[in-house]
Length: 131
Image 1 (cartoon, helix red, strand yellow):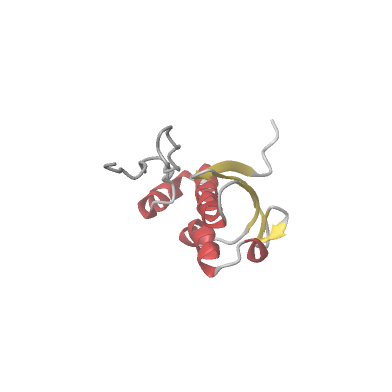
Image 2: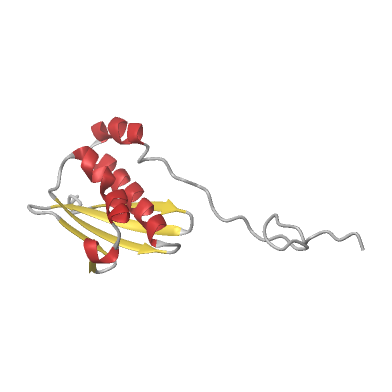
């Protein structure tokens, strides 16, 4: 059976989903939705969040391709971080403990609560009036 050329994993946060592919390469390359990484994630915080899993491993010999969709850019950055962390663990199981210790393998399940009938929002009731 032929060996896989890349490792694929999925990261999620709120309604954001990131499909991450990591390919071993001679130089570092990071592409998100067919755009360069720095062009897609505009703020330093988002860039730092997305790259945190790579910084723990201290290796930059990868070509990373990401398809991200849904929610907002900060949530997509967290989804990318989870996807990269999962792919790095698939590649080498010994990395699991250090990534888990930092909390990068933890899925954040918090989502927006749905609106209920009779209420203005999920929990906000109409203002009560005596008369």
